[in-house]
Image 1 (cartoon, rainbow, N blue to C red):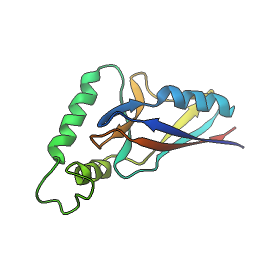
Image 2 (spheres, rainbow, N blue to C red):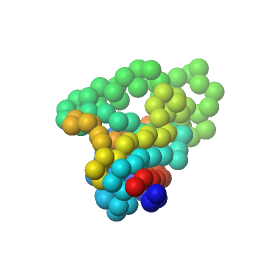
Image 3 (cartoon, helix red, strand yellow):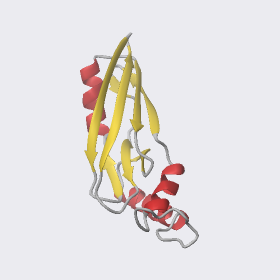
Image 4 (cartoon, rainbow, N blue to C red):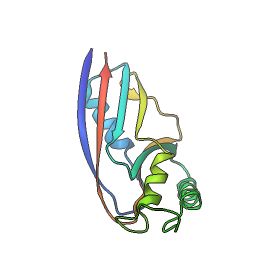
Amino acid sequence: MKQHQETLEVRTAGRGCTDLTAELRRIVRASGVCVGLATVFCAHTSASLLIQENADPAVLRDLLQWFARLAPDGDPRYEHDAEGPDDMAAHLRGAITRSSESVPIVDGALALGTWQALYLVEHRTSAHRRRVVVHVQGD
């Protein structure tokens, strides 16, 4: 069994979605794995991963607006606000999404659906550098 691991440093511009799919495809090709699994892990509590539609950008905008309704910035009920009014809201948004995703590898390629992409979702309003670990294993 082959194993390959890379760490991506993703620079975000603030709240929004960054498509990681092209980088993940590159890593899978570099691994030489034909059949296996790619595990992607976001090492942060105020950013997360999301597999979602890549065709209509309105989907991502609607998701971000939905997150804003569920976990609004600056809610006076939050106790944790050490890094500003978006701090706890970012943690709540991260809690309802995922810190890791697993994607099968079939014939040396990610087995994402036609309209799927894997995104890093930045839940903070300011720019950050995020660390994403990609582990590929298989034959």
